[in-house]
Amino acid sequence: MVILNFLMSVHDIFYALPFSVYGLIEKLQPFFPKDIVFFMDTVQPHTELIDAYSLFEKAVEKGVNSYYLISKKHPSYKEIKKKYKNRILEFDRNELHLKQFFKFLRLKKFINSFGFGGNLRLFLYKNKYIDLVHLNHGVTLLKNSIFDLYNYKEFNKFLVSNDIEAKLMMDYGGFKEENLVKSTMPHFDLLNENKTKTDEKNILMFFTWRMSFANVDYKKSLYYQNMKLLLENQEFNKILNENNIKLKLALHHTLIEKGTNFVLDNADFANSTQLSKEIKNAKMLITDYSSVWADFYFQNKPVIFYRLDNEDPVLNERDNQNSRFASKWDNVLTNVVYDEQKVLEIVKRYVECDFQIDERERQIQDKFFYVKENVREKILESEGLI
Image (cartoon, rainbow, N blue to C red; front, top):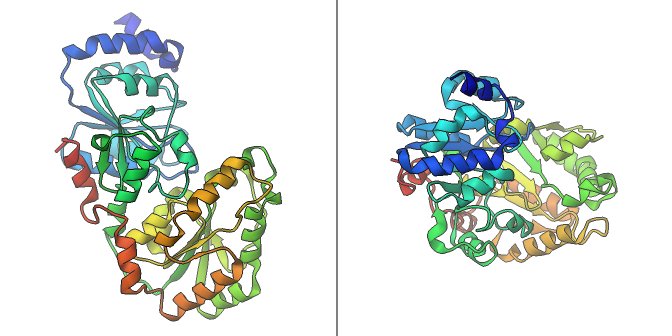
């Protein structure tokens, strides 16, 4: 017991002894029942904990023996720890602590919504006693670089929301159909809950990240320059002013960390750790090919796909390849544009009709979801947990 207590006090014991500890777990697993499920989102501090966390909450409600993994550095840690106490386990840098050793022996499924690496992921992926299920970081459709991380070599099972995405995961990700969980994003359930009518009119703007910005000055990119031009466009600001509309600008967490010098006259920065609230309250979305588009389609709200940096020479080939891949789907989406003036024309149109979509657009949006009600419960049922 003294030795065990000493080992438990070593903060990074799993990192220090990865193979020996995981190997010991695997040898002992056959002698223990499999009745525990782990859920995890991300360790990124500026990212909302939403999909795995919302599914974890539903699992707890349904009596599933569940635990949620979270970094102590995340802004939501204290609040979540206070609410769920011993069901919350600390997680940092793809490591777990030895005090979770006995829970691992009984682990049935590890369900997460962000990719992660290290010896922990390899252990889970190869372990015949544990299903490593990926909930997806967003509906996968418009970026093919995502398949570098989301493929059959990384996860045992993968969540998909529609037939197009399922085919992509089989063609590009290498998954077999039986390894696909056909449902949709767990957090979409929250978009259906506690809906209240409000006179407030918000437009959310969110453009996804470019991998090139790790090596080049993002302020030299068309991404930054065209975003800035739209934010400062006098006609755009006039539309917002005259119709009492507030623009909410949500920045990718990596851009927040780099810092920006955007001056917002008729806009506010959205809280990136509470993005789901902004999505729920907004009347419309302006994006490039961020997966946030699916949240708005799920709610039958208008989306403008503004491809603001098509074939930018500042970007690397992988980013430009993403842009070309996204354009392949222009004909199955709505309101795809490549210049600022078209954005303004469409904004005007939706303002005039109070942001309502027509039946044709509604039908296009709905085809992207296998499920639109009781999403989390149906995922838990499909995985045999309830």
